Image (cartoon, rainbow, N blue to C red; front, side, top):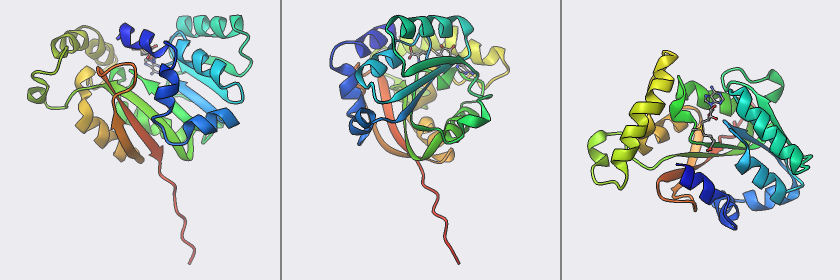
Length: 222
Ligand SMILES: C[S@@+](CC[C@H](N)C(=O)[O-])C[C@H]1O[C@@H](n2cnc3c(N)ncnc32)[C@H](O)[C@@H]1O
């Protein structure tokens, strides 16, 4: 996992990731509002903020320690377009309603107590027609379909010893790493997202990049 994260910071990788989302490269260059959910120590968001100075970047994480580290990094880089906040995905400020054009979530949702409710909270902060990049592990929802996937046994161990206990400790669903593309897609659609593409991110095939948009609500007049 850490290897994939470090790869994301290598030259050219972020641009290729952004290029997987239709129109995002241009929008970021022009200036949009971006939010990263579970931004941890902020490396990816700071990297993005350096490359796209016309856009505004907000990261949040439930862990106060990592948020402090992330803000320190942004300050050291003198990134005036970037801020990090302590929030749980389930308790976001009301003022964030429909505030963001693009939301990035990497390796967070399957650890949550209730990933479905988490996706509803993402929908709350995303504008109509806004875009979402969800990065989750590259596997299937049915255990037998994961036989033969390179590294599946490592995912299973990591899931059993980290992801599932993290969620179960809080009486959560304990979904684990193998949420799987079938159930992830179903959950995204249930939360009102259109899944436009599912592809390997440029930083490795161990994960999948779900490129989504929030449905526009069409109001029909009588
Ligand atoms: C496995 S890390 C991934 C971090 C980062 N997105 C990355 O790809 O390196 C999951 C992150 O989600 C955060 N997190 C867990 N539950 C959360 C919640 N309810 N609300 C916000 N962040 C949460 C954790 O503190 C942690 O920083």
